[in-house]
Image 1 (cartoon, rainbow, N blue to C red):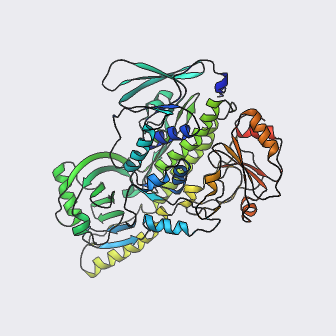
Image 2: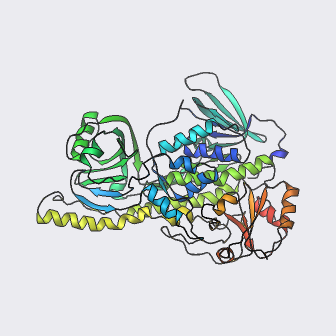
Image 3: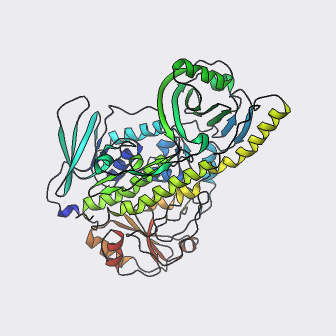
Length: 554
């Protein structure tokens, strides 16, 4: 399916892009479009920010995206206090036996470590632990005060009709009867697992519900306030507590480092408030006062990816396109990366410099990433599939002590779930129609190790230009041509071609001696999403290169 540029679209529209859903992916997409000068309208059925805890991990790549939009500091200001440990601890009960502890640095310790970087340090923005509801509030406030975004809260999306050169979205106020048409060039469904956009497109998920032992199946999520838990019961604080006993398994996540928690009950009866309070007391090991703030049920063990990510001018992002088991924390982060990939392509189409295939490349690039990341989550979950909980696990007997020691040894291997840098930074758009390949062999990849490469399609290798200035800080909002040393070929032919075609292009001259070796070339063309579109020592025909990377036909 091809799309003419917006300069060929003569029919007026209400807004260039309509986004259905104001979760983190939808709001990020709107903010990224705004940063590129593109207006959008966000349709959200809720009347206000959704204050219920969900995911907790904003990985290194997501934090790089937030940095690009000037949001990283605001995101790091929410969640756990800076000095709070982000350990994961496995226990029988909160006042019981500690089976194993995966020690991980606090936010403050991570930033100290990041500040001690080498020139070629590849993590300008370390992973941040903050519950999604806090970060959504940050995004929500920025969306509300961004002039390029129209925020339609309390508005129900009913469906859409494609038109000649656009899409009409049908909406109405929640609880109201009067329908309204919002016309746009492109419509993006960021409306979650039960996406109405995906269903109207007739697109199904493909994949399976994996058997991951106690890591798969129904979950009962509880949002709790327990004022005295950290002060009176817990001896050594952690970010996540796994509570493991025969017949009773749960996780407890510290949300604010004080009194708010999210409990996910995996094995145990919590069908009523009374049963939940009994379960909590039993998991704590003593009575605690609890305020139940909310509840949601969901299913773990999913590895589902939509069969298509788009049809014509209608696209899907985030959970509408893929569902994850929570192992590794890849779900929301993959959605943010979807949005970053899509935003610049929509901007090109709306602003008139995109070729006819640029928007279509979204599915070609992001569906393989969805398959890779859902597979990584499943593989990490399989490592604990066959864990057994001895009936004597809590007993103060030789058998009980041996059972705890054996389980502790088994749990030592679970650190891989929290060391997934290869997933976070290693997405490569191999075979993409808008990448100019250089003929070099594809490097090996793994889920846990990230090895930087400037092979076209990969994330641009990072460099620190000074103690606090990242290479990513100086890339332009559009394309950027890197000259890795002073003797590199002139950028002027490409600059002139881009100017003639209205394609945003900046030039950055690097002086660091590490740059030529890291990039393996004199020149590298970096896309707006910070992935390498081309590299080489001599520019090819500038128009051919720009045609390829903007979705034209060479």
